[in-house]
Length: 308
Length: 257
Image (tube, rainbow over all chains, first blue to last red; front, side, top):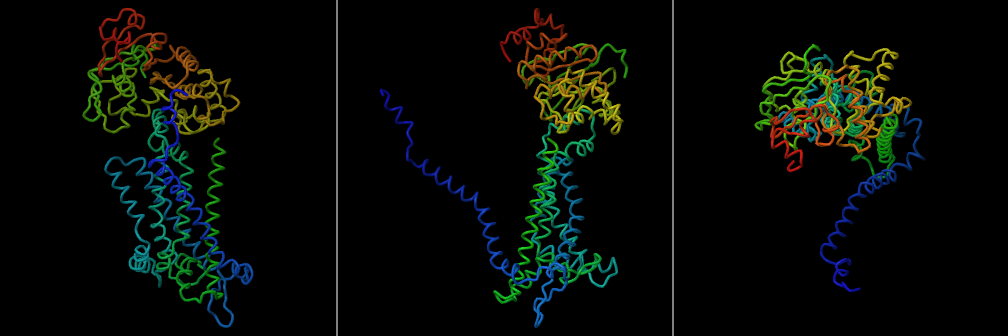
C-alpha cells in the first residue's frame, strides 16, 4: 500500500505503556481472585484438621444434643456442643435486638435527615466507632456493664448473655449503620423528589418509598451484623462469663463457640481429639456463616423477582 | 380553593436566591386558568427555577431563599401557614425524566390519592379512581391487564403518561411540567403533547420547554425569560409572529441560546 507510515502506526508496539498495561492487568486479576483463593484455602485447612474427626470419630448426635463440654475429662472426654451453640445463638440474638434499631435509626437519620456538617461529623464518628477494637468493647463489658448489671438487676454476676449481647449489639451497630446508610444513599433522589412533589411528608417518603427500595441493602446490612455477631470472639469471651451453660434467662453466663476455640486451642496437643474437635467447631461456624449468606442471597433474589 | 380568580398562578416581585446567587429578579407572571402557558428561554434563565418555586419543591435544597408573592388559585403559597402537602396536591408536577416510583403501576397512580385519604380505600373505589386516571392519559387500554407490573418497566412514553396520571386523582388545579418531553423520542413526544393538549381546559398548565417548536404548537401563551427576568409575555401566536422585544426575536430566530 502507498501510505506505509499510517499502517505502521496501527501495529502493536512493545513500549513501556504496553508492558505496564500487561503488568497492571495481571496484578488486578490476582487481586480479584485472591478472595476466592483465600476462602478455599481457609476451608481446606479447617476441613483437613477437623473434617475427618467430625465424620469418623465424633458422635455427631451427642455433639448436637448434649450440653456436656468436658474435652479434657478422663478417661472419656465429652464433646457436647449444645451449650456452646446456645451460648453463641443467645448472645447473637440479643445483640441483633439491640443493634438493628440503633443501626437503622442512625442510618435513617444520617442518610435522610442530617445535612451539612452534622451529617459529615456523624458519619466520621460512626465509622470511628466501627473501628473500635473488640478488646476495648470487652473491657467496657467487664468494667462498666458488669457492675451496672449487678446493681440495676440485683443479680450475683454481671458477665452474662445480657452483658455480651448488649456489648456485641453496640459493636455491630456502627457497621450495620454504615452499610445501611450506603443502601439508603443508593436510592435515587428522583424517587424522593417525586414523592415529595405529590405531597408526601418526610416520614411518608422514607416509609413508603426509600425503605422499600433499599430493602435488599438493608437486609444485607442486618445479615452482615449477624455474621459479625457469630464470629466475634474477644468481646464475647470477656463479657459473657465464659462458663458452659444452657442459658434459660439473660442473666445466665454462657460460653460462645468462638471463645471456646480461642481459649482452648493453645492448651491442646496438636492432632489430639480435643484439638480436632475445636476444628470441628470451626467447621460449624464456617457452615453457619455460609448458610446465613446463602439465605440472604436467596431472600434478596426472591424479593427482586417478586417486584419485577 | 377559590375558583373565581382569573389566574391559576400569579406572582408579584418574586425574587429567589440559591445561597448568594440570585436566580430570579422581580418576576411577575400570570398564568391564566384552563390555558397552557409555556416558559421559554436559554439554559440557566430561571424558567425551571420559577416552575419549581411554585410548588416550593425548590426548598428541598435547603439553601434557597424566596421573597415576594406567589399565588396559586388566589392563595399565597409563601404564607408560613400554608401546608406543603396541600400545596403540592393543588399544584402537581411532572419532571424532565419520567420518575415513576419503584412500585406497581397501580400503587403509583394511587400514591398521592392514598396520601390524601390517609391510607388505602376500598378496592372498588380505588379501582374506579385508577381506571379514570389512566383513561384520562390514554393509558388504560395498554396497561389494564398488567396493573401489578413495576412502573419502572414501562416504556419512557408510558412512564411519563403515568407520571401525569398519578397527579389527577387528587384533583390538582395546576400542572407544572418541567420539559416533560425532553427525554422522549419524537413519536412519544407527539403522544405526550397531544395528551397535554387534551388536559387543557380541565387544568391550568405551565410548561417549561427548550423546544421552541413545541412551545409554538402546544401552548396558548408564551413567556420568554432571560437572566432571571421576564422579558416578554404574550399570546403564543403573537410572540412568534411579532415579538415585542429584540431579545425575544433574537432568541426565537436562534441567534443565541
